[in-house]
Image (tube, rainbow, N blue to C red; front, side):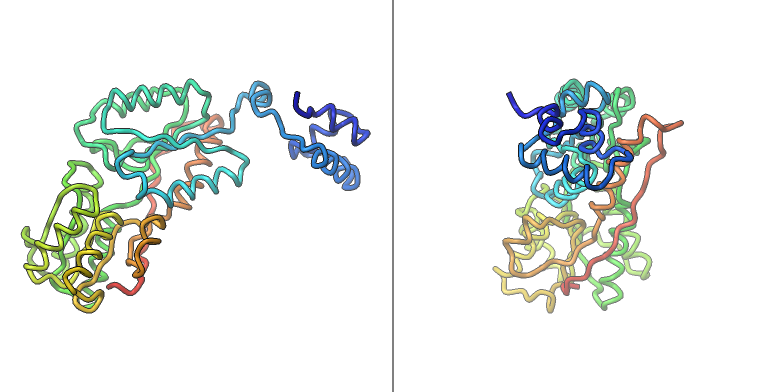
Length: 332
C-alpha cells in the first residue's frame, strides 16, 4: 500500500486536516514553518495524492482530452505541447487521442472519453470533411464541454476557439505582395472543409486587393502531405511563380525539399510561407520557413479555462476567434 495522507500527518506531527489543506494548496492560517514541515514530510515519504479519491470528493477528474486527426497528428505537435503546458500550469492532466474521418467512430471515441470521466474535450476537426453533418448536434448534447478548434463541416459551434483562417491567409499573401512578389501560388488540401475554403478565400482576396487577376492555374490542391507540396511546386514553377503560400507545414516542407532538388534558391527565386507551424517538422530542415502563427499557446489556455469554468457559466460561450500573426523567418 502506498503512502497515505495519514502517514504524512504522523511524520509531521500535524493533524490530517492541516496536512490536507497544505498539500491541496487551500487557504489556511497555518504558519510558514508548519507548512514547510508538512511539505518536507511529504517529500521524504515520496507522497503522491490519490487523484481518483480526490475526484470522488470534488467531482472533478482534472483530466482533459485532446482529439487530433491521426493522418496528420505530427502537424499539431506544437498544439500538443501548448495543451500539455497549459494543463500542467493548473495541475490538470492531458489525454491525447487520434481519430479518423469517420463520423460513427468519432462519436464512439467521444462517448468513450466521456465515460472515463474527463472534464472536457478539445478537438481539432480541420481535416474532417464537410460531409460530416450531424456531429455538431452530438457535441452540443454532450454532457461535458467539447471545444472544437475549427468549424465542423461549415458550422462554427458555440464554445469553439478557432483561428481566423481567412484573415491569416490574407495577411500571409499580402506580405508577399508588399515585398514585391506578384506571382504567388497556393498549395493546399483538396478536402472540402471550412478551413480549406477559408484559406483559399483569404489568398484570393489578397490577390484581388492589389488589382491582380486571380489565376486558377496558380492553385494546386492535393493531399495533406509533403508529397502534395513537391507535386505542387513542380507544376507551379512552370507557371513562373515567385512565391508560394501553403495550407500546412507538411506541404511547405515538400515545397522546400523540391526547391532544393530543382536548384531553386529560397528566398531568392522563391518565397515560402505556410499556415501554422510544427517544431517536429522544422527540426529536420536546416532552413526555417516563414509561417502564420495561430497562437496555440493562447488557444490552449482559453480552452482549458473554458472547461474549468463550465459549471459556473450562465450561458454557453459564443465562438472565440483568435487573430493569427505572420512570423517572418526570412523566406518572404
